[in-house]
Length: 76
Image 1 (cartoon, rainbow, N blue to C red):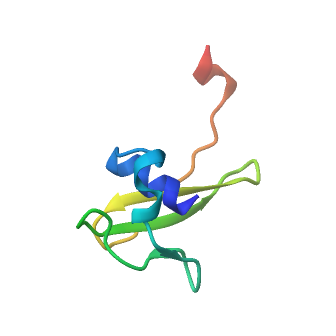
Image 2: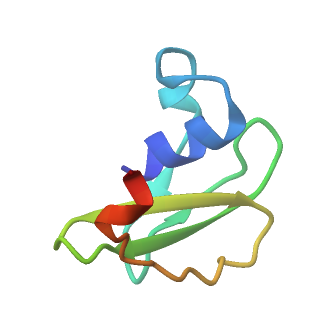
């Protein structure tokens, strides 16, 4: 999930960049080297449904993430 988040953020796609992304999962998910010359910060987000998502942003500061629970009327 970490590699996918970084590659989606860079816009290069999974097929062309999986080998470019090197990650370590402990103590927290992080890149072990820049991707295409750029650093990226990673955040693991726990969703209300029990699933997890990974978020990648340019730079070295992990983003603060707030997960909002949608209401059914948001989709009507």
